[in-house]
Length: 429
Image 1: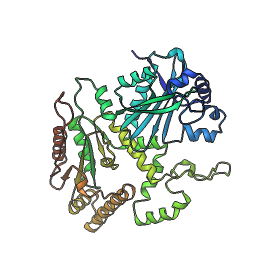
Image 2: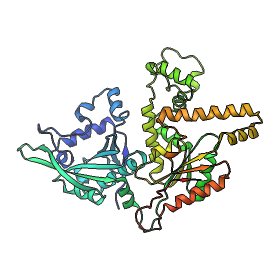
Image 3: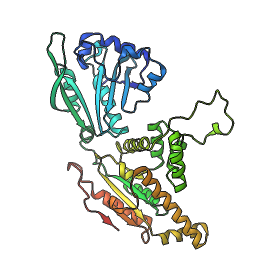
Image 4: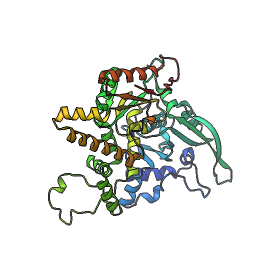
């Protein structure tokens, strides 16, 4: 049984210990090796320089860097024992670096526990499709460890030079998300259903269809959780997300955004209690960093990946058909309803006249299209981007859900048949 480890935020005392560990020849060479000048190699930062770094520099590296994750490895019995990192390349790949600095704890399973925890986080909470490592050829325990985890070697290269001039060569090993999941799944486990996404214009019944499909498939229906996950990924409030989204909902909003964009103030302030009264000068710290479209989209991709990675689910809205993980089979559904039928629904619900109901429907549809075009660069009404388009003019919610659930089940082979089948043809009902 592997020992328990915790991945925690890095402290300054942790960095001091990293510097001390790397000063030991065989510890440094065990994982990171050396530069040709002989200094210990450490990815991401120089421990000796970061010990006394300013708070701003410290936060920039350990808290705000969205291209890298850095964790200290702790145990209840031994405290801080090492460090692990993941470096994202922006194309779905993450390079891992791992160091157990306590020599007396080598070959006790701490490296394996750490690697497995990090892989679970990467493949569950981030849009990572492949993890890879570069390990010196002489580090046999590390090579064996990652081989057992399913990593496959594909080449080697010169890493650096020892003081005597001899090269230290390294091997590349990689693991894809699908292979990782297949190795961690029980042999008797039921094959996963495809991820189902449901999108539809306001008034088309898409939300009710999504929940009905989730009940039929006995999986979770996900909607508001995407927003909560996005807030966690970006470190932003719901108000900030809504502010950015609203800046794309109308021509007037686009004009305001274009004018205020250079000031980097739109999409940054939450409508919270702090704006209910006056702020003193010592409270005012200036406008916070602008939430950009690129930041929003990347965060949304990570949020949806975190939801879709470890469970079967039906996701409603949020452009989820655009951001479903490529390694996960998916069924994308669009619910449509003609303008006339949506107008009748509004009249029945609100008791308004025909003209007012028609205006309401057109306004809501324009907002829906404008947000998708502005944030995602697509027309959500273009039905060619979905696998199934369901007309809700003459279908009940239950009938539509039966159609979608049947299509999803047809994509799942019986247990033990290997890879999931494909629902190749597009369906219009």
